[in-house]
Length: 321
Image (spheres, rainbow, N blue to C red):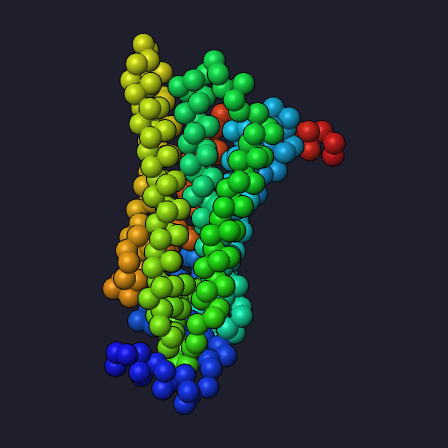
């Protein structure tokens, strides 16, 4: 038995189990708490409103009830749920400097963050495949993709995510925590939480690394493959105007995908989570604040078909009044 294992064992025997954790994300920026609160509150509201508009328009206009827009509206709903798991706590931290969270609530937040986040990654891969079929295989698109298939793919995304992370959270819940109880993050990040355990966490860390790497890298490979084929197809278009229009749309999609995958690879695809715990906070802000604001604009609100549906819906509302 190593010295570290001995110390952990003694700690488990001599100290009481931790009942709550303290979230302490940005102590150096505490004097800017009010300003940061307003900035992040505005970003949160913009993201929620933008994604809500996408959901409402998709289901209000029958012209948008196609596989592409079903996937987009599901993606928007998941984005709303995802940021709601962490942003309210972040806002309270900006106001008070630190926040306590009970152990069961901490595990619950960590689970939903990973569960919904993994589902979003799988959804992005499915959406990339949908665009690949529509652009590269237009004659076969209608026979492959329909509403039933799109709903089945959404269910599969979250079924896989649930299976992966339920097993992980069950293993984490069995760890012992005997202090310290300060998590240097703005939510219950599982890497930070595991690091605080006084149990032997080597197997849990490897399981965490394997699951997160599998989810991120699998969806990344599918997305890169799909968009590579899309780019090749676009380059073969005879019209320069059509190529420019297609590249304009794809480039904006790729910017958001690069931000999302880049930050998550930096955070999760490394076996030793403790190495960059401090810098993980800044990278996590990209996923929880920046990309949720950009996604509604880039994926849908720039779409002319959505603009027309929004105008028609507003016209119907005014006519009813």
